[in-house]
Image (cartoon, rainbow, N blue to C red; front, top):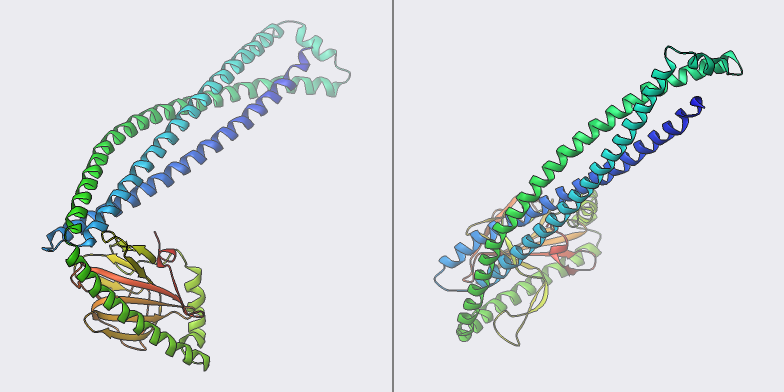
Length: 405
C-alpha cells in the first residue's frame, strides 16, 4: 500500500508547477502594460511641457492671437489625457495587486499541503526504519527488479518532496516581497493622483483663461476678420504655387523623367511609404494648432477654414527640417508669405511653408533631419506649415497620419 502513494503525489506536484507558470505569465503581461502606460504618460508630459513653453512665448506677443487660444485648447486636452492615463495605471496596479494576493494565498495553501504530505512521508519513513516493514515491502515485490524500483521510488519521492517544498517556499517569499512592493506602488499612485488633482485644477484654470481669451477675441471681430483675410490670401497664393509645381512635375513624370523615375527615387519612395506613422516632425518641438481638412474658425461663427496640410506652432526662429530623404524639387517665394520648399520622395512629396529663409536649392539632395530653413512669424505667431502629397495621384494627405506621435 505504501508503494502506491508516490505516484499521485508526484502528479500533484506537476500540476502545481504548471499552475505557477500560468500565474507568472499573467503577471509578466501586467508588467508590460504598466511599462506601456508609463511610456505614454512620459510622452504626454513632454508634450504638455512643450505646449507650456509655446504658451509663454505666445503671451509675450503684444497682440493676442488665435494661436494662443489653440495652444490653450491643446494644453487642456493633454492634461485630460494625462489624468486618464494615470487612472488606467491605478486600475491596472490594483488588478496586479489583487492577482498577487491570490497568487500568495494559493502558494501558501500549496506549501501547507506539501509540508503536511512531506511530514507524512517522514513519519512513514521513520516507521519503516529499524523495523521489518521496509523488508516486508521489498519482499512482497514480485521480482528483484520491482523491489529495487520500489526502494528507488521511495528515496526519490523523499528528495523530490523536500526540493519542491523548498521551491514553493522560496516562491512564496518572492511573491510576498512583490506584494509589499505593489502596496508601495499603489500608495505612490494614490499620491500621484492627488498631485494630479492640483494639475486638474490648473487645467480648469487654463480652461477659464481660454474662455476669457475667447471672449476677448470675439470682441475683436473686425481685427480677426482682417487677419483671416490676410491669411486666406497667403494660403490661396500657396495653393496656386503648389498646384502649378505639381502640374509641371506631372508633365515631367509623363515624359518618363524626374526623380521618381530614377532607381534612387524608387527606393526612397518605397521606404517613405514603409515609414508611414513613423516620420519625424519637421520641427524639433511643436504643437499642431491647425489640422488638415475643413474646420470651423475658433471664434468667427459661420466661417470655415480649409487646409491641405497642418500648421505647427513652434518657437521663434525654430529650424525646419526634412522628414525624410529626397530631392528638392522647388524653392518658391510667396509674396508677403515667406518661402516654400517642396521635396520629392519618389512616391510622395512634402511641402514646408512659412519659412523666413531657406538653406537648400533646387535639385539638391536631402537626408532625413537635414535643415531646410527657419520658421517665419507672419503676425499670427511662430508656426510652420507642412503638407504631404501622394505623387502618383497628386492628392494632399493628412500629415498627422504620417508623422510620429
